Image 1 (cartoon, each protein chain N blue to C red):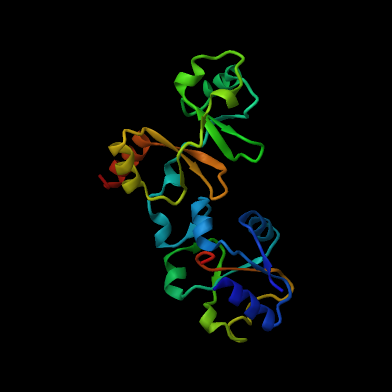
Image 2: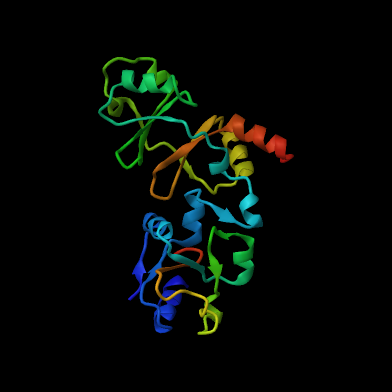
Length: 67
Length: 162
């Protein structure tokens, strides 16, 4: 089960090498995204699209907000 | 969307997945680093003064006043150990000095804005209400700095925004 994470925990995870994925559409990612994030829109989250992610490292996903 | 994405990643075989539930909006509101043309927008966090005096409720006005002398602002923000804003002491409050506890004199619940508040409309609202400065906090209420209207107006003028 995925783990909800507060901002402080996200920063800790990123500091220890976690991967960061923005799941919003590409135009939203292109306009502005968190430093270091890659873009894998949810609608395009296929096995091929995630092949570049490292299974051995934690992953943090985010979208715009909780609504 | 992010919860579904997190579960999708687990379905695809990833075993350590975290969902940053509050998302990009929260990150921007906390004034943290972003990349992209949208990040160039003038926001409160970028123009806020950060070298602000703080004190805790049980400290005295004399303690607070001493710190203000070495800070970038004329007031002192009363915070708890987590840097959450509890109140503010203005120059007139600090003038009394002495051994009075900051918590008994502070103005409770001062207005605040998030770091991603756009400066131009904020300056207009502040000018309309004759507000010279406003605290900038993250979504958890933790102090990030103070945006002084004169600083923001100068920054906008340099950028051609006025």
